[in-house]
Length: 308
Image 1: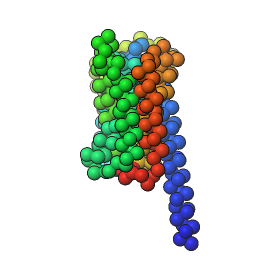
Image 2 (image 1 turned 180 degrees about the vertical axis):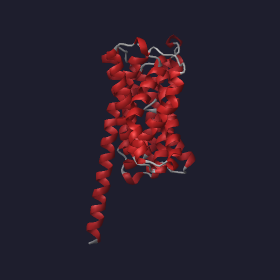
Image 3 (image 1 turned 90 degrees about the vertical axis):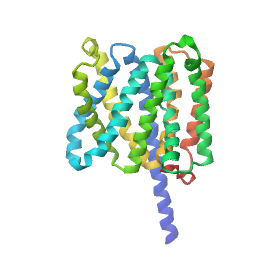
Image 4 (image 1 turned 180 degrees about the horizontal axis):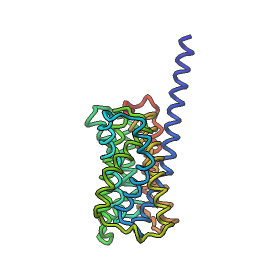
């Protein structure tokens, strides 16, 4: 009888693991498109503050009624903290980065940087001991980051791209903090995303309307529709909620590692849609980062107290 119970428990764990991996896979697709759409918006008819307003305004309008219905005021402080790091800080940093650097760099420094920062924060704040395979996956990811970042960090002809890369790395740090807090507080993913959207909207929109730089009134309706749907619904609600779900099912380390798959998809889409060239160094970096992401995401559940 006990053997049957253990087998059922193992099957349930495998089911949860695959649900988490599937959710992370959908996030990869959403965030790959996010890099392209955001880069297009930041170099076109919108300021970074406009994109943030569309993200927080639309997601907040949808989420606020559900959030108020699901929570009590005494529970709000944790959601406000999550909004500060996973909503406002992440959104403003990443949109500002797109002004200076191309989508291929965002895919690497944001989505490749998230597992890097997650591992560092796990090791320094929780005492989690990372497995050898996890460390190897992170080393591969770091090598890929160096290859892709070398052009903007060391070539003067790239102008201010280095500033965009730094903003992307800061955005990755803020999202890593968000992921670890979600895991530690064990908040229900859907409610957490509603809370982030709600607090981000009520905090940011008044400041934006008081006079932050804006070109929103000059944007064509087609661009407004594209950015509004992608930023406010797909990126803020769908991708954010699925990442939180994956975080709960497979752990912060493995969920964040899956995001390092985004650079390959982003760079290829950037080449096809935005005519952004992929050099030999960038191509090699993408391959290496992708290999690290696959190794890290497919770690067996028993291999890492890094599930914390």
